[in-house]
Length: 507
Image (cartoon, rainbow, N blue to C red; front, side):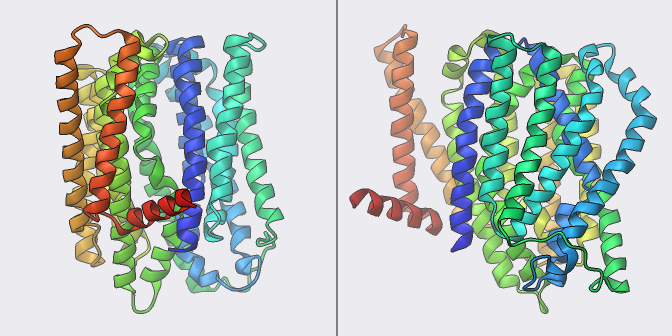
């Protein structure tokens, strides 16, 4: 895979460094020094800013990748493409700023009863959203250059370190108050956007110089139509990840949002590997599907390869999380409060496993002439999620929000993948995925056999014993799973990485 493998590995390393920082921040700093209500506030502010920035992006991320083959040449400005990636999101930000100001009264009334603290800081979402917007723009341009590692490091490492400092200044050293903490959030994303922009400029491979010579009437019409479509699709895609958080905040309060946020963070580790690999593979799938005729064999090979590897890595992480979930909450500061989210972790981790394995299918559809049909599926996803959240949260509480996410995603991907197979002729499924599921079942069985034996020997284990036992048990389960994956040849890519690792160790 060449540059794909190298950039994916570097991006994944940066991501997991960020995960380690985020792990310490979330589970040992935030839970120690912030109340669940304050945790909920920071979560909703970030979710609201993310929603705003995603809408203001106006589909520029996907449209840039889709139309990149039309602009591609040897120039640094790609015939003005990079210029447009700056201008269109700025127009989008102004448009949605106007929408926000018009509907701010409704927004405030929705949260003022159960989450008044969010209402106090709602205006801070505006600068945060602007900075998030241009972080995304720069990351898209880096994806075109097939250089995702540095932007990934900025997002996953720099942002997390800066927020960690903010939490310490607020909760441990009491240098700043809650207002100051929110300002730190805004400044952090602002610096992240500036660093991304500087990286692109100093790479000397990109220029934002305008060039209107390649904008033919036909290309303008196709681009505008595609962008209008994506605005609607972005509305759905942006609302979905934050919908349960907003519903829980409005119906139950920020304290429950905080518990849900911690559970969601644990579950998010399942999909982390998919972020780098999806970003670096998408331009190649776009080129294959936009070729004349479409190179379906290459697109299908990449599609299946990504889906298999995402499922394999995600499944292993999912298992390692769940077999240690009780111990984790026992070790977590104030864990007795956040243990209420245990089953939320299981449900959301399952949902994220499905998403990480099959999300590339929506990308495959978006690069074909049937891209507009994806809007039907995203609208269906939003309607299902709104209905299920509204119905299940009053009945099941925060578990209802997680079930709404899982249920709507399952229905969405079943229908989407069937349609992609029918229209595009490509599909993600392979025999290797059934092997992955079998390996997962084996790891679960092995874990519970070990727990059964240990339980017969030690009936009332101390916390220290449980920690040692958990480390040893996790190591055994992981090693056995790795050996089965290797000798069963579940993934050729994973086997190559394992052999390469052994060669490096042997040197």
